[in-house]
Amino acid sequence: MAIDGRLKDRVAIIRGAASGIGKATAVLFAKEGARLALADIDAAGLKAVANHITEAGGTVITKKTDVSSEKEVKALVALALSSYSQVDIVCNIAGIAGDLVGLDQQDKNVWKRLHDVNVMGAVYTTKHVCLHMQQRKSGAIVNISSVAGIRSGAGGNAYSASKAALINFTQTAACDLGGHNIRVNAVCPGLIETGMTQSIFDYARKSGKEHKLGSRCELRRFGRPAEVAHVILFLASDEASYVTGQALAVDGGNTASLNLPGMKV
Image (spheres, rainbow, N blue to C red):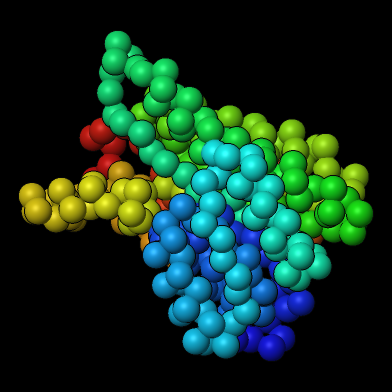
């Protein structure tokens, strides 16, 4: 692990670290010198990521956490503080997708579950870490939203609404905490191959349509977790010291145009 990395002497809480973007972020942060507190509801996946980082010389603690439970999130923050005596960075990455169903089939329980995980998980973590960051007059919080929170057509109704809410929370939190030198930003990934999107990729490959994955993006391809992780690293580092309240799309240009069927050649 880097001795003089971009996150040297920093402590980062990363939620959703067992796979996908969260795993890529954890590995990258460790390489950049951060000490980590990793959380996920997938205990086995979390252990595997932690072992990988430890074997490479990194410093990491883990806690199985249901981010929809304020009690469990509070305990995660308390563990990080008791273990490291500081928290400099929080990455709220854990999320779930829900179903693609028509408006006439919307289920209030699905809406509530997505809101609890995708929105309240970030609210709880920010709530329980912000006093510590305010006392230190320093902090960086990065929330993982989605292009579905920016425009329609990238996810189901409940998922899109939850991700739009997370962007708005990012902006209001940035306003509330900016006077304490705490930056709050969001990253909005497009089509990235992760566990959440794996069924899409599996279907495309099985049906011989893999070449169409990401074809409606300006870069004409899908993205990878590491590409999102590097943007998260930028926002968490001092290189983004004058950036707050932003929702940065990492989507191959998907949100840069009308992106209507038949427009791309």
